[in-house]
Figure (cartoon, protein in one colour):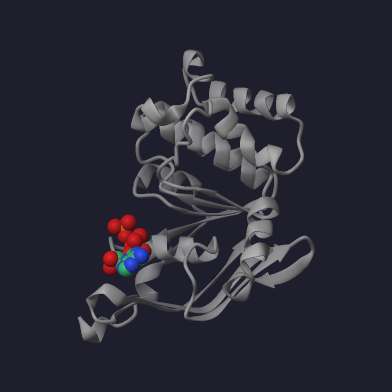
Length: 235
Ligand SMILES: Nc1ncnc2c1ncn2[C@@H]1O[C@H](COP(=O)(O)OP(=O)(O)OP(=O)(O)O)[C@@H](O)[C@H]1O
């Protein structure tokens, strides 16, 4: 079993600059690894720090301590201390992310939104759009929507565009922030199948799933974030 990402002793404290510098310690000593061919799930109650961990792994939030080593183009790179340019390179080639909400780009069609991560990796436009079409069909996104910008789509339709965008590449590491929150039962099943396919390809996945059925269907390991809760004595 190969570890594609290893978090060790990661800390996060938010500092509320608009509130006189109040400090909000969230997690401390976060340590786990993500293994090839497996899906780990972040568990624990609301507000415990699950999304914050995902955002630190993707480089959206800085870390206040510790290391996040990712196997990137054959070398271990520490995301916690990587330059912004390196973080962008890691996102292009190594770590994919399915956020909870689609960041809709005005006037760009759903097909092009989903195809874009392949374009930036050098895949030809029509080939990238063909792969987006396959995913849209799998995710039951009505064909009349494919050429429209997703800004006016329903929550579930936008989420399916977002899932297609996240699953279209072959990133070895994939982070999933509640990808099934707005989906009906049939489409949740499709996402479970997509996750199983990624695992079979050897990807390492880490997700947040509030839906227990989905979580039970995909999880090889549940990481209880409560174990890393910081600053409880100050509450
Ligand atoms: N950018 C931020 N600035 C200040 N505090 C933040 C920020 N992001 C998160 N927090 C705080 O950090 C704590 C953890 O939030 P986080 O979203 O990581 O929890 P979660 O476990 O994902 O919660 P949920 O299950 O409700 O989505 C919360 O108390 C939240 O208010």
